[in-house]
Image 1 (cartoon, one colour):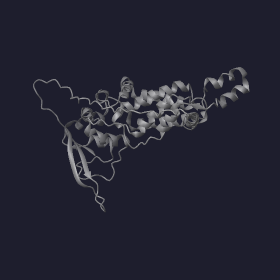
Image 2 (tube, helix red, strand yellow):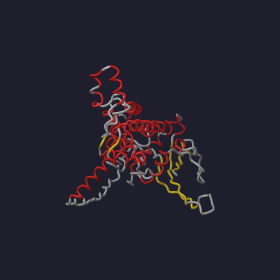
Image 3 (cartoon, one colour):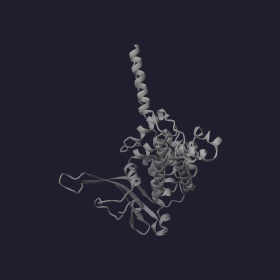
Image 4 (cartoon, helix red, strand yellow):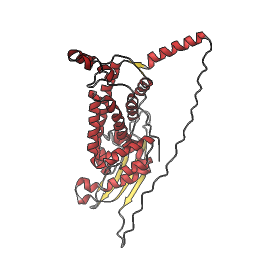
Length: 354
């Protein structure tokens, strides 16, 4: 648990961090509370911020803006310590934690007035670590030379394609609706967690820190939110419009591509708050972009379903638009999308420690 012991101008001790993210903010913390009431974002933030020095400067700047959030000049901070509280699990038969210990991860004190103000130095940037890549080598089994083996191989391939690479367009249409609803729920969840707090330069994760501590090549999509930093709410509205268009199936192909950009941008803007669920949702949006999700249950069905409908006119046109194209879809993306939806979400892809 992260605890901030800050001293105000009038001598009071406050905890600006837990006043926003927790239901317990009274100082001093003598023991661990029964429940802090943190949401998933705050849990991930407190879990990872001790080992992420690149974000300590952002935390320091956010704490110093405490009087701006309260509107009281008396709340100006003159010093503070940021502590990491840890404990051992209770022993068998006990409920209270043991071996409570704390470690200071950040300290600041208002500098004494000087005749000439020295230029502030730039925050130390941690050197980037290059990730080691494992080279995977796969050897394909040699094909049999006998006719029987060839027939068996063809039968096996046909069965594999029919079982794992083929899907009904109605399932794709229903899956598009479910995917769009999940994307909308994720967007609302992030908006309720705090657009300014997590997606602006006035919050805990400003753009320059996100660029320094980028943990994955896809994090370059965070530039999209960087351009809209002061209009973060407008960016959320644009993402919501894309998700709604995907839900009703309006220009589905275009909305599939824009949905990938939107979800990757939202997730990569706050990289070390990602979890396995975010990673799976991004993969699902990416691989379904290669599938014709608009053949069924969409306002603008695909061209094969509507080409003849324009000629017949009247009732036949409305009937064909409703039925859509019933041709089964065969694609490698079918298997990849299904395997992405079954990926365990307990782990997080963010493994960079500093």
